[in-house]
Image (cartoon, rainbow over all chains, first blue to last red; front, side, top):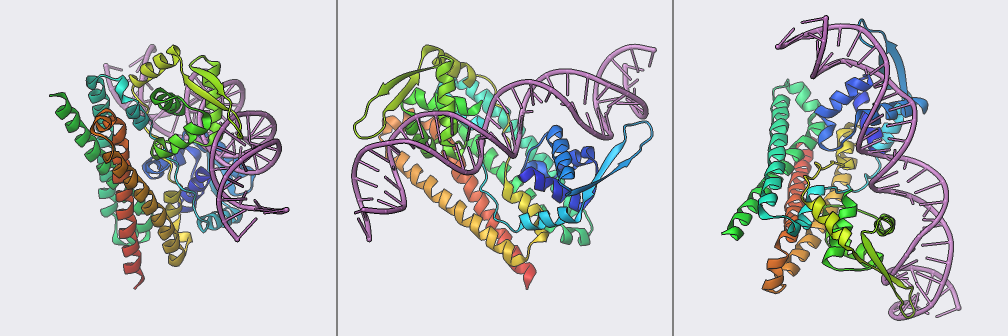
Length: 180
Length: 180
DNA sequence: TGTCGCTATGCAAGTAGTTGCATAATCCTC
DNA sequence: GAGGATTATGCAACTACTTGCATAGCGACA
């Protein structure tokens, strides 16, 4: 259900094609929801079939035509109605922690290597989030005020990554300490 | 794939029935992976079918018989092999943040109410995590040393909840400030 | 004495998400 | 001028997960 409303929200801000949406998704929604391009296209078809989206084909030179989707009245209503309903609690899914839970099957060198790999990824994540944050603060005041709510998830993303990194660094230290 | 290895890991620590597993899951794995009892039973059947689990029926008085599952040699091998493989990156799924992303469809009173509801849930979560943490430190030294790695995810869970709560409290303040 | 919650297991049908592939033109690099 | 990335869309088959229901005895509460 959430993907459908993520799509509606993005199209509410600005109409676009599946491909556009996929890229905008990566730059905004991706730090609190993940989806592949197949999911996106399928969702667009479904929403269009249900009359929540309009679709106009836009011929392009050289490359395949774009299908530009935008909200219908029904789409806007569905979005507003959903926004007012209490959201389901999040589902936690952290494969790495399950692995850690079974960590006694690994040598401490293997553990270190895995941890450092994840640490690397999370640091990269943090860097892209912070870059995005900077971009936000470089926008004109008017936009900052209009989008401030939609910006809040990014702040949580940044703090969550920092927390993860701190935890992993401490765990590495503990591994060191227990080895010598 | 992760649920399957969560189940194997729990059964590796101690054999048990689907019902046992479900409860142990809630007390340990649930803060980094979620699963319903149906998923659990289905996974047990599958793992048993693939020869990774042994199953012995244990008749009980009054209540239905238990099926006690335990790892076979193949099960232990599969677990060890998986533990050494790099884990997939986590999939983020936070419905509430999508809702916030569409937050301009809500009145600020509605927003406040939703936020406070979530804040309440996260505070309750933090309290149960901390109680579990206390329980851990009351265990005998020997167990603390043996289980210290499996205990690390809980520490991350605690820090993550604290981060969430801090973020939500700040957001509430911002909502207040922008209202007056 | 009725119903609520707990222990204990499971089926069936549905929705959501993943993986792998396919097409096709254009732009850029070597 | 060959190969690869980018733009743009999509099918098919699969796996994972959810929802709603069913069964069935026991203990506690009111």
